Every structure is written in structure tokens, then in C-alpha cells.
Length: 116
Image (cartoon, rainbow, N blue to C red; front, side, top):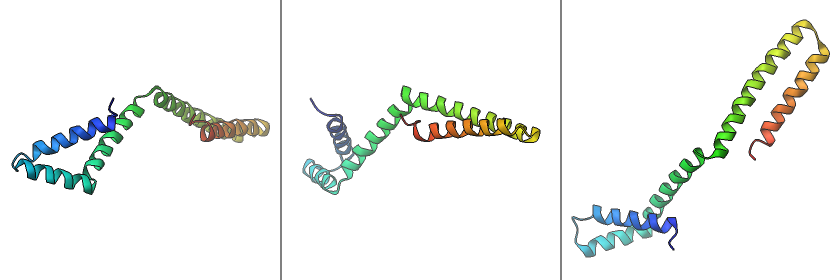
């Protein structure tokens, strides 16, 4: 069974050969071999595989969960900042410390544990 990289490489080589239809068959294979040695075929294959991987990662459930967590984090951060500002105006010092501690805990969670 062929790997995905081999399948894409064969497709790129076939596409390159079809683009060289103006040349003779011997010249086509020489040009293709030159492109292989220079690494241009491998770069095209890697670019295609990178795009494929990026599309898979963007639509994965893990990515959607991460985006949801980031939205919750942003809302909580805004809410806690507003509450801290209000408690500073009211001079509820104990509440300020509690809200600041909760805000720090939320920030630490999203900094260190969000990538799971």
C-alpha cells in the first residue's frame, strides 16, 4: 500500500510530464529527473501535504473545542475585569482580592492547560 506522500508525488510528476508535452519523451524524463534532484517535486508535495494537514486540523473537533474555550475565556475575562472595576469603586477590598484570584486562576488555566 502506498503512502499519501507517494501518491501525491506520482500525481505531481504526472502533472509535470503533461505540462512538458511540447518536448520529446527523452527530454521530458530528463527535465523531470532534474526537477527531482533540485527538490522542486518534493517541495510541491510537501506544500500540498501541509495544506491538507492544515485543513484537517481546522475542521477537527479539537479545534472547535479550543475556539469555544477561548470564547469563554474572553467573556470571563471581560466580566471579571468589569466586576473588579466596580468593586474598586465600591471599595470592597475582600471582593477585589477574590475576583483577582479567580481571574488569575482562569488565566493560568488557559495559558498552561488549554493545549490539551
